[in-house]
Length: 303
Image 1 (cartoon, rainbow, N blue to C red):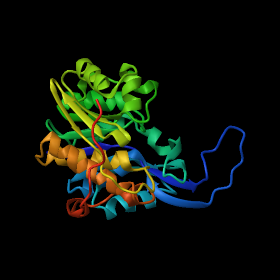
Image 2 (image 1 turned 90 degrees about the vertical axis):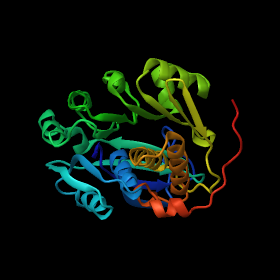
Image 3 (image 1 turned 135 degrees about the vertical axis):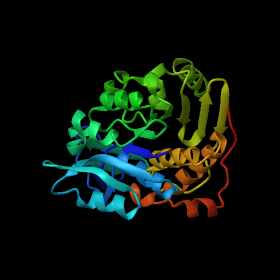
């Protein structure tokens, strides 16, 4: 079984600010840092650091994409399906406040130059039973999902960022959704955590739902099965890559044979370690660090 992440690659410009910029406001940042990022790149690195073999497919800029290629290769991600665009790589402008929260502005760049021909070339190297991971930061998503479904690949979808594109996707073909409560509410309406999970499992009866809830932990549902796991108590420095870390570690854990409950625990611990460091890709822990970490579960569940 092979894992293909057909996803975005961004250069992240991170600005540390006393508060998020308000309309009409000019604000001085206290620091500026540059990192490799993009949900696709982050999740590929999380998969690789979790011990999985992952192929990354996507596009980078001809002039500015070398750091993105090197970051993937340094982390053991297979990059034979990475192509160069004549234009610029995708990038993000990220504001980080003193509490570690973030506000992100994206520019798609080369991520929005994925063509059907390129998708055909990549997907021809995969077969039934292989895993395809997708986010919502590249073009040609409906076509990629259609071809992957025809092949018989297992589709894992992180529908982020949530916009009108998601509702146009063939979501009935998704094997596993990994999404937060805001994205879940956009798909099925507002409601308590358990209600959101029930609605999603009813709407997509063949899919597993992994619903991340920030400080309230994570819930899992498939059919009548319901699981949950709290967060771990850690000091928060930067939450930018927490969700991507969780996604990569959850998929790696499931593919390697762990039960969904075990995967929730491993991914939750990895995500907790990620929020304790600055940056996106640099904050993602290695599996040895996750296994060695002695963390305390935070609080109790409230229904």
